[in-house]
Image 1 (cartoon, rainbow, N blue to C red):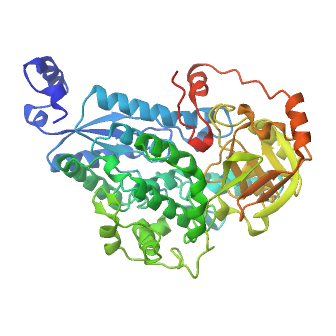
Image 2 (image 1 turned 90 degrees about the vertical axis):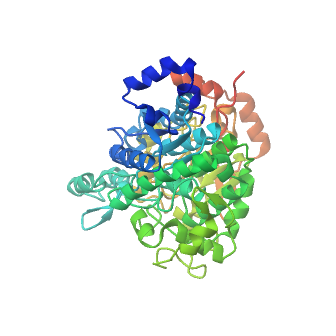
Length: 554
């Protein structure tokens, strides 16, 4: 056993003495030792119950003959960190999580790992760590939150972020907004729609690293506890069979994950995290190839914020195995791809599609192409990402004048001051991986645009990124970013910008001579003054089209 490095032989007498201090018997040390990585904390609603998940996982490990040892991982709540300096730290926390798990699992040589994430950057950070370490591992997330009910209708976090704009423009009363405050997030779990947390928990299941139901069983259901116990038992099988993450997350798994991503219309952040996950697995990821998959896969499921359904509805409709069953019927996935409990063919054989209003047929699909698109053009020669399934039909093709802001705060102030009008293309720059630094989510501006009723006439483009809660013509990850000399830095108010999502294009309609003149005369904004972790992060982070991985180690 790998754990013999820390527990066996004469030279490990002092080590065993320390294990006795932990209350571990020799019988427990004779078993495989499984690290249980729990991101439980009291600041993220999706993580406040992870201690219960961890206890269930540990029970499963013990039942199957292992000894669990729990250790923590940090986590940032993107919603609470939104629209202030806290958001600078969200994406960088992904690398910290991966690094800290690597440190813990190598300093203490566990035989296997169970990862317990739930929200935002914790999930991809843990996936990156699992692939980097390549120890037998399984994931069990905390599960999605249920939707709430306010002002007589079903609500979720989307409604809370759109409320400020609605209140400011008189479209909602403060009393109605307070009802949303009280009821939009009714309890534990990752926020109820197909936002980043649920997108990545679903992706974990789709890539094969979680058991069926990992992405969809609600946090409050006892089935979530049972799932955790089964995950604890299953990791022991993975240890005995020596099945490792790189055996499961292969090129065919990534292709399957992308196909399902398009069918589900997941968060644009999947296009930031999948390249980083592939980097850890040693798998090439071609952002340009994403459109070919999107063009072939119909958009079958539309969850909040793009649609009316939530994760609980998808779970009741048969879950992700049912979605994969539909994609298999269309010949769009490889069912030989491995999972932690067999293959996708095994799961699909047991799957049942229970609600065709939630998981639609190809003939009744929301569109015949997928929910995400990668745009290219002079503004984004290395790519930009849009959740096209959440774009209103009238905004799929749009040309309008630029209204430029050099930070998220300036943009919000401009929106609330009435500087943005119908038809504008709002430009928010210097918010990329280096420019932020940290590539903040622009949920507050997109929420304001939607709440003010401008989402049917205005677009927003940025070198930052978006929360999965965002909807509308919100185009992010523009690469290269403004701080790296990208064309976005040289856009001026009034410049015409053409967006053509069906044809994957985004262009600044300014002639090349004028662009060259601006580049010669304009000095881009100097780097922000940062210190500590953000300073180190900015020095090492790569472009968004590469997954904003850390690659400058010289």
